[in-house]
Amino acid sequence: MKTPTRFMKFIGGRDLFYGLILLILIGITIFIYTKISFIFTPVLTIISTVLPPVILAFIAFYLLNPIVDLLERVHINRIWGIIIIILGISGLLTGLILLTAPAIESQIKDLASRFPIYLQQMGEGIDHWIQNSFLAPYYEQGYVWFTSNLSDLTSRVTEHLGGAVEGVQNVASTITSALVVIITFPIILFFLLKDGERFKRFCLKLLPPKYRGEMNQILHNMDVQVGSYIQGQIIVATCIGMMLYIGYLIIGLDYAITLAIVAAITSVVPYLGPMIAITPAIIIAIVNSPVMLLKLGIVWAAVQFLEGNFVSPNVMGKTMQVHPLTIIIVLLVAGNLFGVVGVILGIPGYAILKVIVVYLFQKFKGRYNRFYGEEFGTYEKK
Image 1: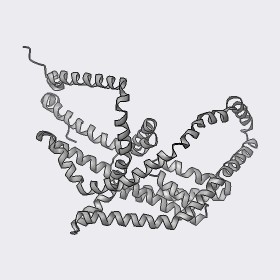
Image 2: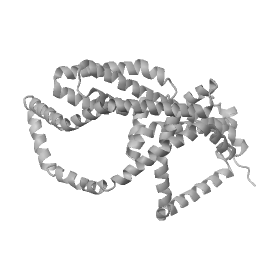
Image 3: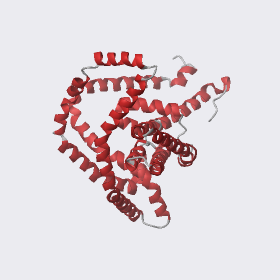
């Protein structure tokens, strides 16, 4: 029998053919699934029901687990520590909601009623400025094109929103789903905090002993990457919201607390979030006065300077080590594939995928060094 070449040994030898056969079988399975996918509808329903509280529980787990570990190190029983933290945070959030809810509710109602007026005033101002500038001829051409091509825009929107009436009928279902999430989320969080490490050890024992050490290292790296990102991003978003609220109060911008909360929530999404957050503030400032717009620019620049030079470097550190361009691409792709959920979970998902790819590349380098290193030189370890 002919001896396999070094290249065949490098790519796996006969194991490669077994792998290709396995991929073909997986492809056939996926093809069959697409033909009988209706059979798995109950499974997909179960997953879609369970997934939201599980995701929320994992996010809260990464935020609270360090505190629980700290309490355990000072000789507080882990279960009691979990109960104290959950009750304390629940009480704190309830108090904040009760204190701020009236002001936020009135601001939201007022902003919702006046925002169309703000948009109209801003549009009239821009229209007046364009008609008195060198852009006036182009404005007329653009207006003609708009009226000729998009005159039926209202009917199109109405057509697409026609299903909204049917959506109103599903309000009860939506409320039920929200209640399920609210009720099950604390229970899942409690058991994650209590038995998370035990569950990890149980999963590792299901693997052959040969692979347990490497899988444990992979899970540890994923835990560090995702945990650091979630903790850091929420802390940074909270700091941004607080700084903007103080700045908005100083310059006297209307709806300060509502705009600050919107900024804090959207800042969870890096790079794109702040651009979304500043838009309503810009509209309100433009309608107010040019001076207010200038003040808003100064506040926003100051907050971005503090966040970029003091908050993020100290909170986020260099754990993620992801280039800004990579983050933007990941957000665009994940958003296009999975919508809002993809935008929120895209970076943690990328962090997990990065850990797996780095591990596989390390394996590739070790295999290359084994078969080609002596003749052509070896890969560096790092």
